Image 1 (cartoon, protein in one colour):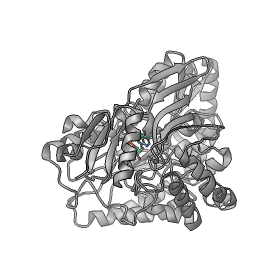
Image 2 (cartoon, helix red, strand yellow; image 1 turned 180 degrees about the horizontal axis):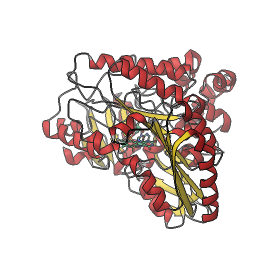
Image 3 (cartoon, helix red, strand yellow; image 1 turned 90 degrees about the vertical axis):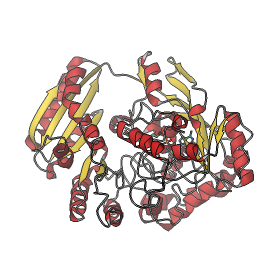
Image 4 (cartoon, helix red, strand yellow; image 1 turned 60 degrees about the horizontal axis):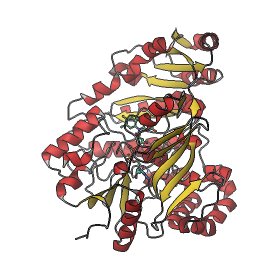
Length: 527
Ligand SMILES: Cc1cc2nc3c(=O)[nH]c(=O)nc-3n(C[C@H](O)[C@H](O)[C@H](O)COP(=O)(O)OP(=O)(O)OC[C@H]3O[C@@H](n4cnc5c(N)ncnc54)[C@H](O)[C@@H]3O)c2cc1C
């Protein structure tokens, strides 16, 4: 029996509290050993010391909305939503400082009062925490113009696996023991492997898979390794963000394509007009929401300084794609754009209302390929899934070549787990063949950890191990995430005969959170 850590906040090791944290978004269910909800950075440090002393692992966690299973595990959940909600905006410097617990939407609300915003705009910002967004290198529809959150993180305060609190700031050499170990044991190896890194890292517009050795090589900042490290290199307690002015004028387009072959050409044409979003709704999505007829719809947003600039950009973009499209609709104001885009939100309630035997599962859900291979990728997913009789819903961030997929297997059918497992294997092979990454923005979690060897190869994988060992020699921070343990990717499913039992009322509440996207909910209330 574990003694409680010497901390302020909540420590619970009873079965109901553990059950309340057994799931995040995504497909996994795992019962943690206990739950800690610290209320300050000193408490986080105390928990890390305690975990090291007792050789128990920690699973850092924000809102639990990430898809790959980085927010669940058999170690002790470290729920960071209890950290005091610091949120300070410096409009003159266009900087914000938030604690890890602050949801991105709150940051945007405060920044908006000064005409500023955090541009990438993840659709989960209502609940996704600053810590979770940094840890997954989150992105959003506007990443096509503004990149992933990496570009906007100036520094983080982090508790290392040694229990030291340190700041990692761009351009500043850190002094914490973990950083010293990294500089001595891992950094020289990374630098001398620059050719292999350049050859093996996917040339995609986004990548949240593996440790970002390429970004680290470009900047020299260990901060770039921590961004996207999914709680495996340190526990983020505060984040300093760069902000950007909100452009005053916005318009949009809705483009229906008759052929998947036109997708790549249409997107490449649109990118020339510097759009702030180019979103894809595939035929599978359109059929689900009862808007069938096109092979794909592209939703485009353009932001400019004046209405005249919006008008010119929308007209030019429409002209550039008209020969590829069955229909082009345009809007010149934010309201008109919103009307064109309304269809984008139509799938969520339908997916949430599916009967229990037909579940929407995020298994091959986050791949990003070079934009010129996107049509091939969408076609491959459709064909592979159809060959295994698994319906799919495909949508995503077309401007970045980044495609989300929801599988809709019948979970009462004989052998459905084997089917989706094979599908994951086959589609991953396609991603690698097309020069893509298995994760554009959600991170690897435990879902994709076992796939990375075939994406990056042995030399890069051993560099990932070196990075991990330098930051976390005892392996207490989120084991099994990014670096594989050898377990099959679809172990610990929340659905099906193998799912561990939870108290009925808690299982129902977790299901409700999933169906209603209620990830902002305090999980201890369930217990
Ligand atoms: C409906 C829906 C829509 C979504 N849309 C988007 C989208 O548009 N773009 C996008 O990028 N993602 C999206 N996501 C995924 C998810 O919201 C993001 O990955 C988000 O950044 C996760 O934040 P969180 O607070 O929920 O983190 P969690 O899920 O709790 O944790 C995610 C990972 O980060 C680690 N972590 C969390 N906090 C910390 C910390 N303080 N220090 C160190 N490690 C930490 C965890 O260990 C875990 O590995 C969506 C999810 C859902 C359910």
